[in-house]
Image 1 (cartoon, rainbow, N blue to C red):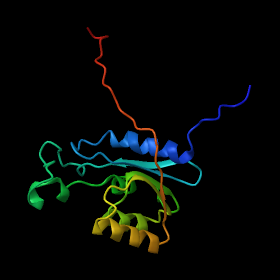
Image 2 (tube, one colour; image 1 turned 90 degrees about the vertical axis):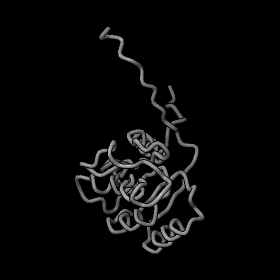
Image 3 (cartoon, one colour; image 1 turned 45 degrees about the vertical axis):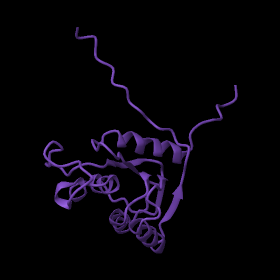
Length: 165
């Protein structure tokens, strides 16, 4: 019997893991996930956008409008940075898979940590100055940028546990 042909590529597979990680985000507007993978296709770390450890997501704002202090922007840790910070080992030489192109602040962390390749899906902020700065830095640092599309989107349907009834 011949082998099955229509399997996921490694990039599609690990982008799926980034999407799965994004499902952990409690952000009501934007859920971003990231996965860091080494050259042997081993997962090194994952992350999603959310508040830092010890900062309750019930006590901090999720708002997008208003001053910095009353919006999420001063508090949320992006998926890429969470994945880098959560890694149990150095990520130098690894590939970062992320569902949304990294911002300029995450680009700095990506470069400094030694990540060599960024695979991303959405580039919805491509014309903003911060994204243009991010791309400029990543390219200058020799980080390979790969955009993929048509990846598998994951959704979760919570089914009530009827065994306890």
